[in-house]
Length: 561
Ligand code: G16
Image (cartoon, rainbow, N blue to C red; front, side, top):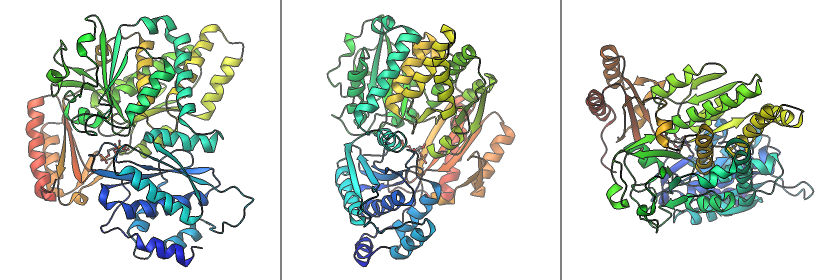
């Protein structure tokens, strides 16, 4: 098993506080993370040795969190989030005073052999990527040293988006491909070209009067967007917040979605006055590691300069809208194909009630499900369907195509089918190569959204918005001392404790049943999240204030942030 030298080294890396593997791995202030990432490197190596595989992945990022935070998460050989049993092991290993015991137990339980002398069998590797935070590269180096201590090799990709790393791991294991940015972008560009040819006609692409402005949150998405534009030759796409300002600060998908205001923009050389008056402008924001994307429409019309827009109200087209758009287009294409294919749309309790009602109204074959927050839950539910569409309201999601669905589409194309049928199958296949099949991906979703809008013939975001009216809603994040006191059930839709808070919610729902509230501890930040929705903004705000007071009283207010 582990020799004494290895164990002595692992023992040296002991975190000073306790950590738990949350919604998206371990996250904290970056200075607390070196021991955590070291032990995660050991765990990643163990995971790679526990199953026959080419590689597993390890990403250093704190995504939407502030720049001084960082985080680490592991990626399964199939490109998904870490298996839940291993999440428990991860928390145990990171916090343990006796890592030898935890690791030996793990080796027996998972039948891991660390005897690595057999030169004939190829050893798995750990693929490592990181975001643009200044703490990220040094943390990635620590991971490397841990993996090498076990005798495995690392493949370091440097700065990549989180979904790119998920993709690399998936294709290396499942398709035997050389995982690199080139084939990631080529796949996107082939999908886009196919749609241009069969769905909306290449000429309209060059001629459309749409200006697309992408806020890159001053994160890793800026480089990825530049590549995307180069590979696809998409027209009129301009990136702002490409790295001149602070990561996620007053910009990016999380900020836009939670605050519904226009981002701060360091103009990045793009002059708003250059937009022609008859152009339609599509604004959208990525988050810090480019796994989320939300679109938004400024409430005030008449754009003149960035400064005057910053902080102004916007109407956010949250992730739910992507699900709706995808479901509409896929349903249309399946109507042409005339095949029996199940479509699942997976949401969380944050999904706006109006979107859920709209999706349920679409009828067969669309089915709607609600699961707890966290991509791993959405992905698991989506995989039950032939086509699984999942999005969190915060803009994190994708469309998953089951293997048998892809085969069926390929057969339809190869067979002597009618022209229209072939076209529909080609378009669906193109969507499956644009939508990241490993995890939600802001870069893929930008081109996906633009393609779907084009397919619907919608130049203006207002056409997408006009499908239904979102119920007025409100988000809050509260700094509390004891977020662990919050317990929920029924996919987080029902609060179990603290009792004082659930009594407030019960009183609200008895007197005003058209309102709905969600209280849950964040798995990525030291906060409790509150969400409410209902018909009147004023009433909703009053109720949210009351709920906020009840939560602060029950969980203890904390002003350390
Ligand atoms: C991560 C997860 C998402 C989750 C979000 C917020 O996103 O991948 O599934 O919705 O955190 O989680 P919480 O409300 O528990 O803090 P990201 O973009 O930060 O990686």
